[in-house]
Image (tube, rainbow, N blue to C red; front, top):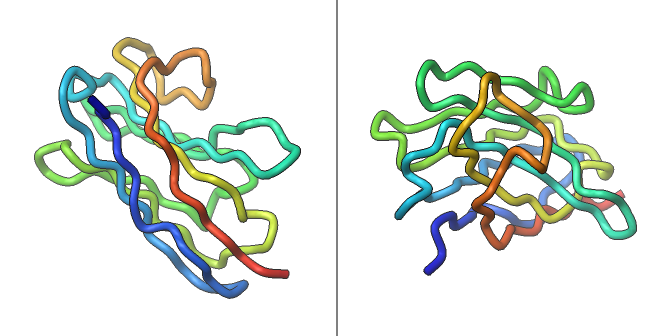
Length: 125
């Protein structure tokens, strides 16, 4: 049973915007933080944004600061990643993940235990 399901990926031109959604269910609803990660072909997966469920504190990778915004709905069941001013280097499979414990909005893979399957974002060069 999948506990995190991403949606909203697609093809967008450089400079365009896209909003990804992460539907959270099951045990993952007890999350401490939800993180967004991405992996491009031939590259390691990297954390791009994270939000803490308790106080909505956030953190971002330097490469996306000022362009991406992570947020949650009021119930905390859906987490969004709003992406603006997209660049070809943003193209990747984007996944959301849930951490059940922590001290800060982590961008480290090892802090997350539940993972979604991912959604493809394509930005042509």
